[in-house]
Length: 285
Image (cartoon, rainbow, N blue to C red; front, top):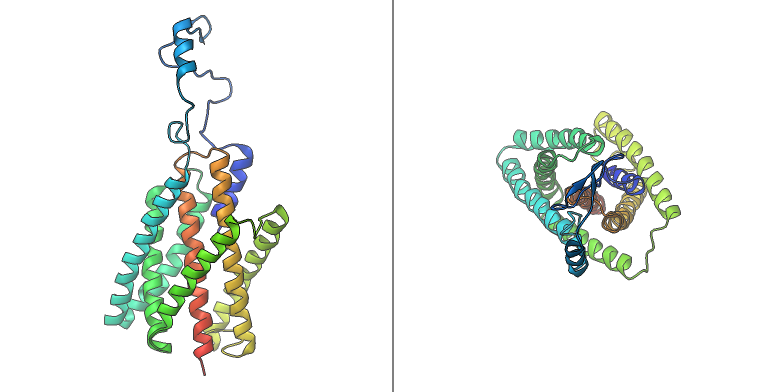
């Protein structure tokens, strides 16, 4: 739930992205320039004039990430989550044991892969795609369980609420109504880590006590906890949008579009799960 992907992007945006630009001590030579002496290149007057007449290189020409890259990668991963989510839903509907395997396997698998992706020195597209597939199986299985346990309409309501919240947070961020400052980022990040620790403890308590929601159940305390979690996941979207803007502004390599998209999908799924829990608590006895 802590989404360490964006912590990595923020860190590298300040220090410079690994592998982007010439290494220390190396001189990059424009193609076609004659080499003179110690690796130095002296362009001819005609070549200098041609360079001057060329239009300025944009992010696409220089191999840097653009908003279009992030949008396309996000849609790709979102499609994978939806597709494997359908598999998880159908499999759970046909066989409850298979659904439990999708649920637990997806939850554990995404936790492990998420940590590997966040702390791996290089960006691995296959790992990110694998994460989206496992996440889809998990989402499909857990959605089917909530649909059977708390009535039809719960899942569709959670989907609409998630998309509406995403749109609202995006408009608030882009309009400047919600500003992401360093202080705001620190507070939200600390809250995320604190809630992640609580979520682990709550999961263990729910398993041991055989209660579906753990602390608070379907009472006022439980509903309050779910409202807090939904609000925290919503604020995390603002951090995601800001991190994307930072990566684009600082000239992150194009490959980072996969990591940015992955982080955004992680937050969206977290928000959807919290909406499921909140709505189920409201419907609980």
